Length: 50
Image 1 (spheres, helix red, strand yellow):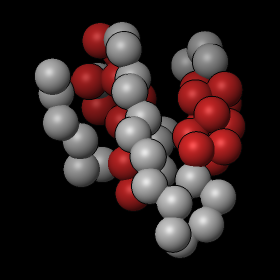
Image 2: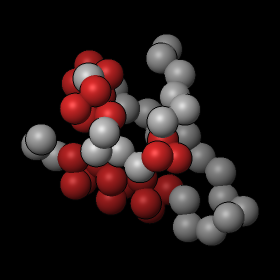
Image 3: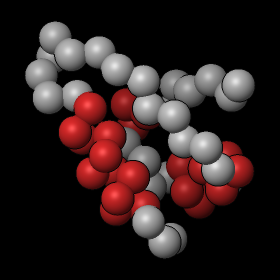
Image 4: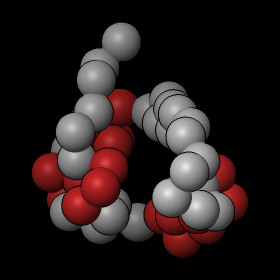
């Protein structure tokens, strides 16, 4: 799973406290695959495909 660590690190930089809000945009079809979704934090599971 190339790059998944960098994706998780970037997401962690977005939200630093409970008052922070942000949007994480994953622009790659591989993130629609179950094997990749299982590697993402549970908070990211409610997503919208645009």
